[in-house]
Image 1 (tube, helix red, strand yellow):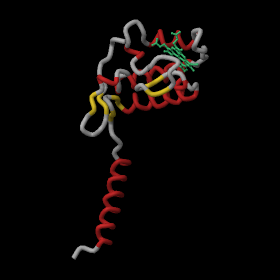
Image 2 (cartoon, helix red, strand yellow; image 1 turned 180 degrees about the horizontal axis):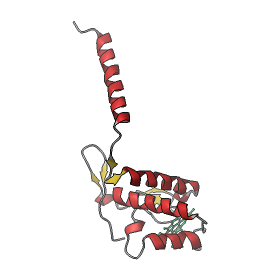
Image 3 (tube, rainbow, N blue to C red; image 1 turned 90 degrees about the vertical axis):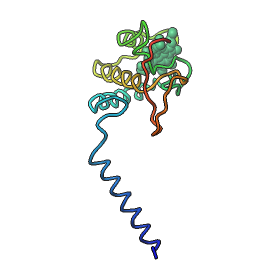
Image 4 (cartoon, helix red, strand yellow; image 1 turned 60 degrees about the vertical axis):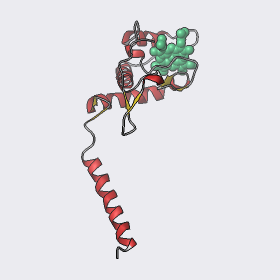
Length: 142
Ligand code: HEC
């Protein structure tokens, strides 16, 4: 007769084993990005948060709605890195200008590159994989 306490202990052991195996072997890549790209993107996300871009802009369709969604801005026709830099440095009537440092720009661009690879602003073109992750798609049109 299997005692409940053994079931409990087995589940605890399985949990610990799984947790350690994740910590010891972190995934080498996610969404087609290697660890270096993921690190740069993570730093860029902090820049994004520091200046509160999210209050007016969306990523993956989530965020404020004063400005446009920026998920695929880096790859859109006629936009890209220089366009983004110019937009941030000069601002518009509705968007304030921000004085980012060169390092912050580099990190922010890495963030934009990463989100473009891992998602589409157009919800109808998402591919949801079996594990619940979302497959990035090339997205060039507006
Ligand atoms: C107060 C609201 C506001 C904040 C904060 C803001 N933006 Fe904007 N942003 C806008 C608006 C509105 C537009 C559209 C401007 C226009 O067309 O005149 C825009 C446009 C842009 C564009 C061009 C998008 C496109 O598809 O043409 C980029 C890139 C951008 N913002 C980046 C940023 C970044 C990065 C930050 C944070 C550092 C930021 N914005 C913070 C309101 C904001």
